[in-house]
Image (cartoon, rainbow, N blue to C red; front, side):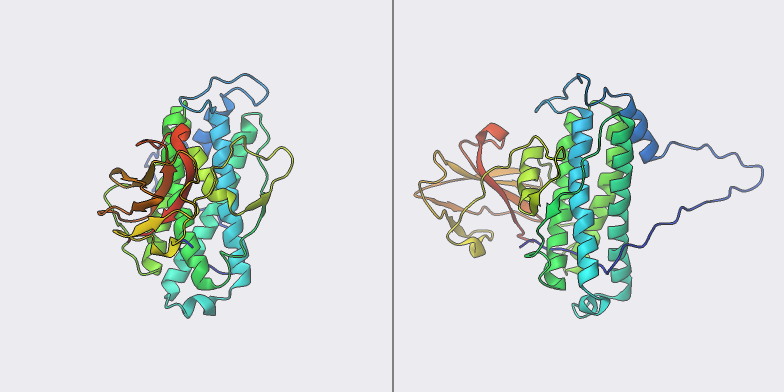
Amino acid sequence: MPSVRSIFSGLVALAPLAAAAPAGVYVRQEPSAAAMMMSAAAATPSAAAAAAPAAAGGLTDVDILQFALTAEHLESTFYKMGFAKFPASDFQALGLTDGQIKTLMGVGQTEAVHVSTLMSAIAGAGAKPVEPCDYNFDAALTDAKTMVATARVLEAVGVSAYLGAAPLVNSSDILTAAATIVTVEARHQAAIRIASGAEPVPAAFDTPLQPRAVFTLAAQFIKSCPQGSNLNIQAFPSIALQNPDQAKVGSNLKLADAANPGGAQFCAFVAPGGNQFSQITDGNCQVPQNLSGEVYMMITKSKSVADGEILAGPSVLQPS
C-alpha cells in the first residue's frame, strides 16, 4: 500500500491571521486564491447552463472544480478519521519528532480549508458542490505506519491530479488559484516523505495524471456517494499481477492472467521526466530503470497513455 503521513485526532480550526501594516505604508490588497476561484467560477455558466467544454474530455471549469472537491473531500476525511483513531504516541513510536507531528497536523488542517474554499467557489458558480462520499479506509488505517504510507501516496496523486487538470481549465483565474493549492499539496508530500524517511525531492519534475486515471486510484476508497455527488467518470479496471510485491526497478512482473486484459501490449510507467513502456511478452513485462518517486503503472494497447489506450490501472509504484 502507498505511503502516508501521520496526524492526530481532530482538526484544529485555523484562525484567520491579521497583519497590521506600518503607519503611512500603503499595502495593495491582492485577491486571495479563494476570491479568484470564486470570482472566476461565478463568471462560468451554471450547471444548468450550457458551458463551453475545456480541451480534452469535455470537462467544464465547474466540472474540474467538482473533481478537485471530490479528491479534497476524500483526503480531508482520511486525515480526520486517522487522527481520531491514532493517538500521538502511535506516531512518536514511528520516530516522528514533535515538530514533524505538528507539521502533519497542519496538513490535515489545510486539506479542510481546501474543501471549504472549493465548495464556496462551486456554489458561487450556481452549482451544488458534491458532498463527501461514504469511504472505506480500513486497509489504509490499520495502524499509524500504514496511515503515513497511504498519505504519502494520496498527496502524490493530489499533485498529479492538479497538474493533469491544468490544461483543461479555461479560466486563468481558476488556473492561478488551483496553482496556489498544488504548490501546498507538493509541500505536504515533501513533508510526508521526510517523515517516512524518503528523499523529499526524488525527481526534478512532478507527474501529471489525467482525471480518469486519478479517479481510478481514488475509487478504491469510495463505497458510495450521495445522490447527485457521483462524478461522471468511470474508473479503469485494476491491474492484477501474480507478483505485485516484486514491482521494483529491474524486476519482471507477471500478469495474473496472460490473456487478460485482452489486447494488452505494454506496461506503461508514467513517471517524472517522461513515460516509459515495456513490451508485454507471454504476460510478462519488466520494470524499467531510472524511475524515482511515485510512478504510475498502467496496461496499454500501444505506447500511449491516452484514455482510449489504457486497459487497466494505474497502480502506484515507489522505486524511491
